[in-house]
Length: 158
Image 1 (cartoon, one colour):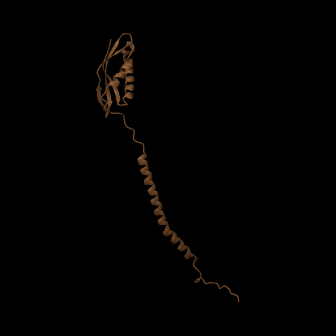
Image 2: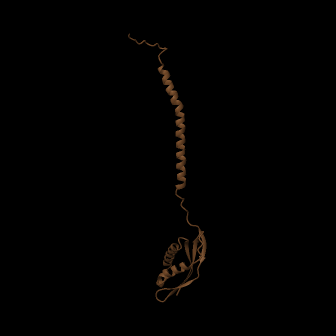
Protein backbone atom coordinates (compact mmCIF):
# COMPACT_ATOMS: atom_id res chain seq x y z
CA UNK A 1 0.00 0.00 0.00
CA UNK A 2 1.29 3.31 -0.84
CA UNK A 3 0.80 6.38 1.12
CA UNK A 4 0.52 9.55 -0.74
CA UNK A 5 0.99 12.88 0.88
CA UNK A 6 -2.06 14.93 0.95
CA UNK A 7 -1.47 18.54 0.35
CA UNK A 8 -2.29 20.57 3.39
CA UNK A 9 -4.63 23.41 3.11
CA UNK A 10 -3.57 26.93 3.97
CA UNK A 11 -5.52 26.71 7.21
CA UNK A 12 -3.75 23.54 8.30
CA UNK A 13 -0.20 24.61 7.29
CA UNK A 14 1.86 26.26 10.03
CA UNK A 15 2.02 30.01 9.63
CA UNK A 16 5.54 31.09 8.72
CA UNK A 17 4.73 34.68 9.71
CA UNK A 18 3.62 33.54 13.14
CA UNK A 19 6.94 31.78 13.80
CA UNK A 20 8.81 34.91 12.75
CA UNK A 21 6.66 37.05 15.06
CA UNK A 22 7.36 34.72 17.99
CA UNK A 23 11.12 34.96 17.49
CA UNK A 24 10.91 38.77 17.20
CA UNK A 25 8.87 38.96 20.40
CA UNK A 26 11.42 36.80 22.19
CA UNK A 27 14.25 39.10 21.04
CA UNK A 28 12.31 42.21 22.06
CA UNK A 29 11.81 40.88 25.57
CA UNK A 30 15.50 39.94 25.85
CA UNK A 31 16.94 43.20 24.43
CA UNK A 32 15.79 45.52 27.24
CA UNK A 33 17.39 43.24 29.85
CA UNK A 34 20.66 43.06 27.96
CA UNK A 35 20.64 46.84 27.40
CA UNK A 36 20.06 47.40 31.11
CA UNK A 37 22.94 45.11 31.96
CA UNK A 38 25.17 46.88 29.46
CA UNK A 39 24.24 50.30 30.82
CA UNK A 40 24.89 49.13 34.40
CA UNK A 41 28.27 47.68 33.43
CA UNK A 42 29.30 50.86 31.59
CA UNK A 43 28.17 53.01 34.54
CA UNK A 44 30.13 50.83 36.98
CA UNK A 45 33.26 51.04 34.83
CA UNK A 46 32.91 54.84 34.62
CA UNK A 47 32.50 55.11 38.40
CA UNK A 48 35.57 52.94 39.02
CA UNK A 49 37.61 54.89 36.43
CA UNK A 50 36.53 58.21 37.97
CA UNK A 51 37.45 57.04 41.46
CA UNK A 52 40.81 55.81 40.20
CA UNK A 53 41.52 59.17 38.59
CA UNK A 54 40.47 61.04 41.72
CA UNK A 55 42.88 59.12 43.95
CA UNK A 56 45.79 59.10 41.49
CA UNK A 57 45.53 62.58 40.01
CA UNK A 58 48.66 64.68 40.43
CA UNK A 59 48.64 67.12 43.30
CA UNK A 60 48.22 70.76 42.40
CA UNK A 61 51.51 72.54 42.23
CA UNK A 62 52.02 74.71 45.28
CA UNK A 63 52.31 78.42 44.67
CA UNK A 64 55.32 80.48 45.54
CA UNK A 65 56.40 80.22 49.18
CA UNK A 66 54.85 82.75 51.50
CA UNK A 67 57.15 84.81 53.73
CA UNK A 68 57.18 83.91 57.40
CA UNK A 69 59.19 85.26 60.29
CA UNK A 70 62.56 86.98 60.04
CA UNK A 71 65.36 85.46 62.08
CA UNK A 72 67.92 88.17 62.97
CA UNK A 73 71.40 86.88 63.77
CA UNK A 74 74.19 88.55 65.73
CA UNK A 75 76.91 90.32 63.76
CA UNK A 76 80.18 88.49 63.20
CA UNK A 77 83.67 89.51 62.09
CA UNK A 78 85.21 87.76 59.10
CA UNK A 79 88.84 87.99 58.00
CA UNK A 80 89.30 89.24 54.45
CA UNK A 81 92.42 89.12 52.28
CA UNK A 82 95.22 91.61 53.02
CA UNK A 83 94.70 91.94 56.80
CA UNK A 84 91.25 93.48 56.37
CA UNK A 85 88.07 92.36 58.03
CA UNK A 86 84.34 92.49 57.48
CA UNK A 87 81.77 92.91 60.19
CA UNK A 88 78.52 91.52 58.85
CA UNK A 89 75.11 90.98 60.38
CA UNK A 90 72.43 89.00 58.57
CA UNK A 91 68.76 88.29 58.94
CA UNK A 92 67.02 85.31 57.34
CA UNK A 93 63.56 85.60 55.78
CA UNK A 94 62.01 82.23 56.58
CA UNK A 95 59.21 80.54 54.68
CA UNK A 96 55.79 80.61 56.39
CA UNK A 97 55.37 77.59 58.64
CA UNK A 98 59.11 77.14 59.16
CA UNK A 99 60.14 76.77 62.78
CA UNK A 100 63.88 77.31 62.34
CA UNK A 101 65.35 79.17 65.31
CA UNK A 102 69.04 78.23 65.17
CA UNK A 103 71.25 80.44 63.02
CA UNK A 104 74.46 78.52 63.61
CA UNK A 105 74.48 76.96 60.13
CA UNK A 106 73.78 80.38 58.58
CA UNK A 107 76.70 82.01 60.39
CA UNK A 108 79.03 79.16 59.44
CA UNK A 109 78.00 79.39 55.77
CA UNK A 110 78.44 83.19 55.82
CA UNK A 111 81.96 82.86 57.20
CA UNK A 112 82.80 80.28 54.53
CA UNK A 113 81.45 82.51 51.75
CA UNK A 114 83.20 85.76 52.73
CA UNK A 115 86.48 84.56 54.27
CA UNK A 116 89.56 85.51 52.30
CA UNK A 117 87.78 87.69 49.74
CA UNK A 118 89.62 90.81 48.58
CA UNK A 119 88.39 94.12 49.98
CA UNK A 120 87.64 95.42 46.47
CA UNK A 121 85.18 92.59 45.82
CA UNK A 122 83.32 93.10 49.09
CA UNK A 123 83.10 96.92 48.70
CA UNK A 124 81.76 96.79 45.13
CA UNK A 125 77.95 97.08 45.35
CA UNK A 126 77.32 94.85 42.30
CA UNK A 127 79.66 92.19 43.68
CA UNK A 128 78.04 92.49 47.11
CA UNK A 129 74.59 91.78 45.59
CA UNK A 130 76.00 88.77 43.77
CA UNK A 131 77.56 87.50 47.00
CA UNK A 132 74.26 88.03 48.78
CA UNK A 133 72.40 85.96 46.15
CA UNK A 134 74.99 83.19 46.40
CA UNK A 135 74.66 83.20 50.18
CA UNK A 136 70.86 83.05 49.88
CA UNK A 137 71.07 80.05 47.52
CA UNK A 138 73.46 78.19 49.82
CA UNK A 139 71.40 78.94 52.94
CA UNK A 140 68.24 77.77 51.21
CA UNK A 141 69.96 74.45 50.53
CA UNK A 142 71.40 74.21 54.06
CA UNK A 143 67.99 74.85 55.64
CA UNK A 144 66.03 72.62 53.21
CA UNK A 145 64.37 75.53 51.39
CA UNK A 146 63.17 77.10 54.65
CA UNK A 147 65.09 80.32 53.85
CA UNK A 148 63.70 82.49 51.09
CA UNK A 149 65.73 85.66 51.62
CA UNK A 150 68.86 87.08 53.23
CA UNK A 151 69.23 90.66 54.46
CA UNK A 152 72.39 92.40 55.57
CA UNK A 153 71.70 94.19 58.84
CA UNK A 154 75.31 95.33 59.19
CA UNK A 155 78.12 95.46 56.65
CA UNK A 156 81.32 97.24 57.67
CA UNK A 157 84.79 96.73 56.21
CA UNK A 158 88.15 97.88 57.50
